[in-house]
View 1 (cartoon, one colour):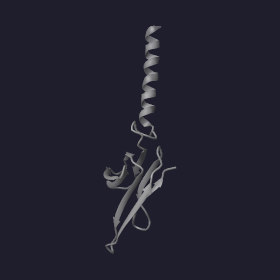
View 2 (cartoon, helix red, strand yellow):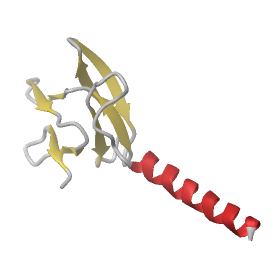
View 3 (cartoon, rainbow, N blue to C red):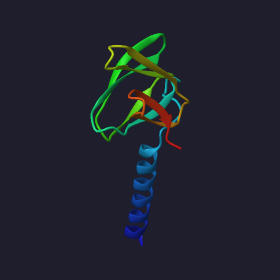
View 4 (cartoon, rainbow, N blue to C red):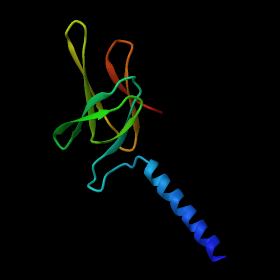
Length: 113
């Protein structure tokens, strides 16, 4: 009986920890906003993430997602005509977004829902 109760408790704890690890969570312990950014392209991308008046680069491998701590994300595209187009996108905490190469030949962001 005691062994069975221990196994049940272990199963519940494992499930709870796995579920906790998969959730985005809206904020860090410091209160900073957290989102997920999914790279749906065939190549690694580097985006810039804004947090507290600072922009930092964040690399996401192809087909992977990354946990973003910040309130905005931006990415630049250099077109064939040498023009540089920057997309600056606001983030909502606890949401999942994807980064993709759109039909106009630029990097873009969109919610995954």
